[in-house]
Amino acid sequence: MFQGKPGRSTIGDQKTTPNEEAAVFDEDNPEWTEDDFRTAHPADELPPEILAAFPKTRVRGPQKAPTKVPVSLRLSPEVVDHFRATGDGWQARIDEALKAAIRKAG
Image (cartoon, rainbow, N blue to C red; front, side, top):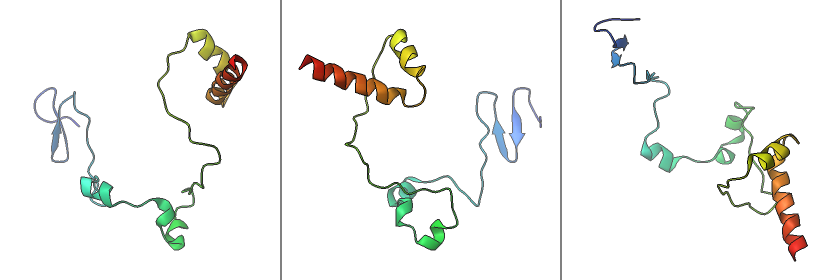
C-alpha cells in the first residue's frame, strides 16, 4: 500500500524506502537479543513432552566419523563439474580422491 511521498511506503507504523527490506514485527515472536542467544539451550536439553510438540526437530547423535575441517578451496571448473555430475555426496568423493592421492604418494 502506498502512502505519502513517492519512493516511500508505510507498513503499519513503520516507514520504509525501496532500499530497505520491510521488517515484520511479531509480538508473539520478537527478535532475539544478545542475552537470548547467550542463554539459549540446544533442543536435546528440552523435556520430552516439549520435543514431542515439534516432531520435525531432530536431535543429532554423536558424530560417527572424525570431524572434518571446513575450508574454502578453489577448484577448476572441470573438477567441480566432474564430481557434481556424480550426484549427492560429491564433496565427500572429492575428499576420498584426495585421501587416495595422499596414500598413493606415500
